Length: 322
Ligand SMILES: Cc1cc2nc3c(=O)[nH]c(=O)nc-3n(C[C@H](O)[C@H](O)[C@H](O)COP(=O)(O)O)c2cc1C
Image (cartoon, rainbow, N blue to C red; front, side):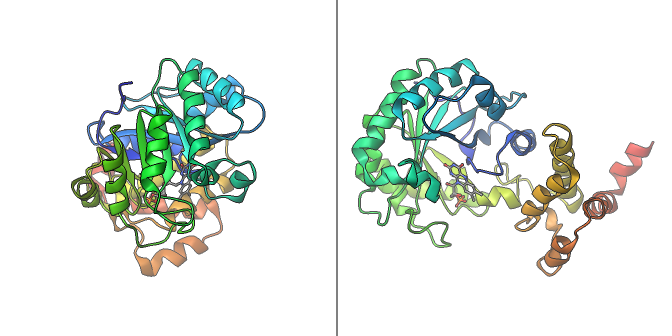
């Protein structure tokens, strides 16, 4: 089935981060020809299919030129298949299956990365969702293996045999968790093993790495996770100033408070989560990061961001006051 992505770079699914507010801000700031799509956080399906309204909540209210894939994770094939049908009804333009989550909860339910030890089950899981979803593409996201990467090809072929329209491969094994050093050669091996398009993932740190990953591995798409938390403009490669960077974080806090009805402390907690790794605009020099994070009063932290947003861009503020 035709993939609806509008460009070659994709925002990774990230639990606790890529809920509708964060996604919306990133999608708004990167043109569709660069950022081609995004994904929800993983949505766990246990014994019962999820209600359509829960799926719709994950997809969010706003629609963009870029598709937002709904990511499912589960071990009960019947419940997954029915959830897939409901997800189509809820308007999901694409369904993604998570075979990489290293969390213990996922393993207890025999889902997520646990299926990297059982390619036949991985294939059956893809097939169950592929058969259930009649109108939208189904994609699979795997890690390079469970405790070694010897079977990348086997896992990639299992996803393809199950009917996946795209394979995303996060090149770390489950055992490697989120280690610094990554081996893109594993992505190249997956590309060689299957005929379906492959999306490479793992260790992209800056915009230039995206094209480099494509050139070195032959993957058609490249996906960014952690680096997008520090620089949401990584997809377009646009260099923003400190003011624009501060405004992203202020907009994020405001959206979380209004749209997601988070109390100020929770909204600012999310902002701090980004400040820990923030690189965009030189807003948070390394020697000032600890001071930003020490600020306990949510309003004072927002004040500091407002000051940064104003001081670096006098032209814009003058225009706003006029
Ligand atoms: C905070 C966090 C949450 C994540 N949640 C998910 C998830 O819900 N589903 C998923 O498939 N991968 C998840 N991942 C993995 C990312 O999608 C991605 O595969 C991984 O971060 C590697 O890419 P990177 O090196 O660019 O960060 C998560 C990663 C992080 C850092």
